Image (cartoon, rainbow, N blue to C red):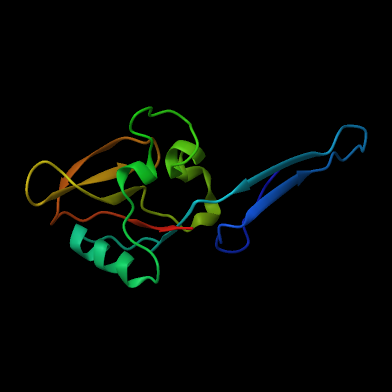
Length: 141
């Protein structure tokens, strides 16, 4: 089946109910509570400072940390981080996400650079702050 979020997450419990078409199998319910919500700015790319300013200007949002995007301790599918839980962002046409990488809040080891995450495969690395890239913004719920 297809599940569609029709509004921004609030942190309230969400229940998805799967009802078989034939009516012969059991109804399946899955309940969960969102701990965070992500937005993006579509196709606009900008340097790290611009991305940080953009996210901070959205009420309650900030650039996400690498850990909020991927589980760096175990870079496979797991719950709690965007890519680790949902996988390749290219698979979700309704997101409006056209840039497949995102700046992260975390500074890298060298001055003037920050981490970025590739949202199609979960790779991450460092980039100089003046380079341009995509972004997502995160809000804790």
